[in-house]
Length: 363
Image 1: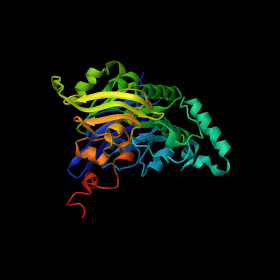
Image 2: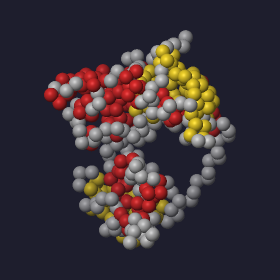
Image 3: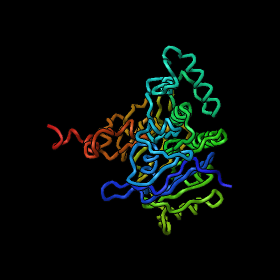
Image 4: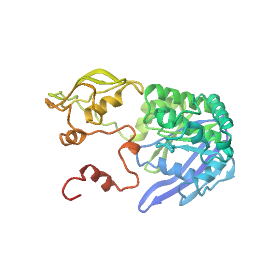
């Protein structure tokens, strides 16, 4: 028997000008269930969750939370009600510790700067209860992305969240961290929490969710129980048509990039690889095993202590990042928001930043 809804969203409508992001969407989350929310980019998932979290006001529709009318005017209202949202881009003060980040904006922490020991005990107890494996005194800047995400989850739980919304939580995680996060979600469910999991990774949704809701073009396309939510069925619902044909594999050409015996003290030890024209080369490993350093060495963002970098046969070991960029090398970091984009600037301004020395942008 399906439990009673903890949250019920009925007939949610939201338009931005001529774009109707949500068109009469019905969505509910039963008590103690994990519900997957799927949809292609632009299907209305983020808008629906922003309505839930009080970030935008719906044009029409109604919401019930624990059977009572619910109309948040801000995220603070949602947090007070017991709804927490873990965004793709974390809201953490990286120079502060785990405990300090948990305390920021939390009325339950009181005058925590006078009672740091008590705060550390609260963080340690909460972390252990949900298997989050966080040390209160660790500086956030020193934590891998998976641990930073767990800090965000702990922040919401200690504020009394009974419903957690996770927006693309595995997009920046390695396989081991993904498995750890799914275990955390199961622990949360066993402790009585409900979860909304927004994801594009169908096998993860099928593995952990009790129900799956699919949005398409701002409308609810389907709601499936776990037994019917196979990756193949979900893929068909998402695309609403036949899958595109898989292109034939390309024939690799000459070597474009060569790393020969690259070494970085304490981080890389004689790494060599060739990347050929028309080839996609995968670089795998758990977080912290040197993948980022290899990419940065190739892009010229760090100078190796040993080895050689070649681009199209030319020795590029001493080239700057700018010179390599002009030679056709591009680098997209894992933390795009923190390392390569300025969110407060326009798309055009962000695109122009790499060309600021070119005529037309500066004198």
